[in-house]
Image (cartoon, rainbow, N blue to C red; front, top):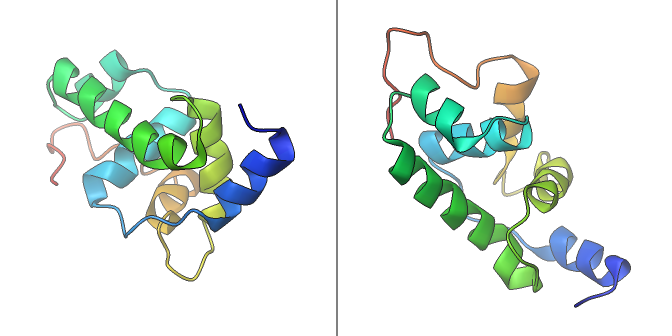
Length: 111
C-alpha cells in the first residue's frame, strides 16, 4: 500500500486516452454519487454490463497507481485531470458542471 503522497503523485502523472461519450457519462455519474442500478436505468443499459464498464473504468485509474477499485480515487483523478492538456477527463467534468450526465429521458445513450 502506498503512502497518500505517493498515490497523489501517481494520480497526477496518470493520464488516460480520451474517453468515449459513454465512458465519460459513467465516470461522471459514478463520481457524482450514482450507483450502478440507477446509472443503468438512466442510460437505458443492462445493469450487469454497466457494472462491468464501471469496474473497467475504476481499473483504468486505480490499478496503474497501485490501488484497489475506489470511486473516491476516481473522483480525485477526475478533479486533477479535468483541465489537463490531454483532456482525458474534461467531458466527464463538463457533464457534471452542466447537469448533462444523463441524456434526455427518451433518448438512449450512444457509445
